[in-house]
Amino acid sequence: MADSDFDPGQLSESQQEALGTYTAVTNQEPSAAVRLLDRSQWNVQIAIAKFFDGEAPDPVEEARASLSSSPAPPPQSFRRETLMNGFSRSPRPQNRSRLDPAPRIVPQPENQNMYRPPFLLTLLFTPFNLLSRLLSGSLSLFTYLFPFVPRLLVGSSGGRAQHRGQRDTTGRRPLNPRDTAARFSREFEEEYGQHDLSFFENGYAQAYDLAKKELKFLLVVLLSPEHDDTSTFVRSTLLSSEVVNYINDPSNKIILWAGSIQDSEAYQVSTALNCSKFPFAAVVAYTPQDSSTSMSTIARITGLNPPSAFVARLQSAISQHSPTLERARASRNEQQATHNLREEQNSAYERSLAQDRERTRQRREEEEARLRAQSEAEAKAEAAERRLRNFEQWKLWRAQSIPPEPTIPAEEVTRVSVRMTSGERVVRKFRAEADMEELYAFVECYDILSSERPSTEVKEPTNYKHVYRFRLVSPMPRMVYDLGGSGTIGSKIGRSGNILVEPIDDEDEA
Image (cartoon, rainbow, N blue to C red; front, side, top):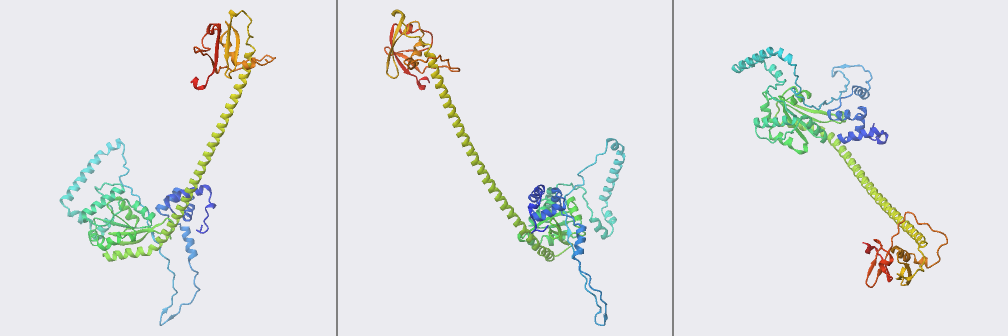
């Protein structure tokens, strides 16, 4: 899939989700990411592992590429021999050499998993274990007393060189990558003194990932303390001002990682980088021409080299590969800018969407409040109308139960003069033994009693309890005739009395 033909709309929803997850972790261009995901069967974990660990070349694709790129065979011609040039030879095309891939190495300590045999086997082999320890102690004492014997047994220098390629971690406790790097830096300073080199303070895998992420050059330096040239290389070459200044120059974008092959991690790195001679230095860089996730060894520097030659080798490798990294860096910056722009657009869209949702919520709440207030007002109006209707019905019902003015002797009646709230004075006689509520009912229903009564019988309204909104008061002396308690009109007012009707307000009730 070419970059110009890449269209995210052609991907399915699951493929777009896998592409988003992959690019968020690796920060790779979408076009290259789609190709790698397609080769990984759209498995995000496999694609991420290929990106960081490097993708092995596909032999089928290489064969196809070699067949398509190989030129057509020249037409057959006769070789002519002359006295001037001998046999004439047609030029042969030379295949361009591929860079060696640099894998990502994760250290695996030897003593990470220890096998514990069953107790019965341990008890059975205890005598052999004691005998082995006894022989080992005897050999250690012998080599301590006669230190020249092991050197004679090693043999020639070629045998020594071959022996140095092996690990010797006797008595060296394996640590995690960060602690191993700190131990190497401490031992390096103890051996060679203070220096200006900035070693990467973590494992090789972390330096590898950082160089791949930031598109920098990873300079790997491997030392063998047993090698005769190690001290000379460090003092005269590695710590020389020319080499130190070149490595520390920020414009060269170099990450320096160093290790001793006595440590498990450095030994595994030396094996992976095909180290054949010490001291050893290699430059590892991102090579997009081989693969979108490839990290390759672009230069190897072995053995003793003067500072000028060492810097020249580094400068040649870095200058040849810098344009490739610059193009990849520009492409990645463009991709990051596009990603940032898309993120800003998404953020602005989310903010606008949130504002729209907030305005919609406010309008909905305002509408709900308006409808609730309208419903409450309608309910109140309906309740007031129902209360007024029940009140009018109650007055009609109560008015028909008020007896007419009595015509019995004067000693059995009470003459009451009532001043209404309208100012009208009404004089009427009531039976002295009538309840005080009858006087209240007369005042409440006076407008109906003064007009024509309905001819039909009116029933008492249901679910209605009448409350008198006035009180009857005697002016001189002031006395309030409440309905509370028992009492008749005659017992409270006497033979006659003047009564005022006072309305009761809500404030008065409070």
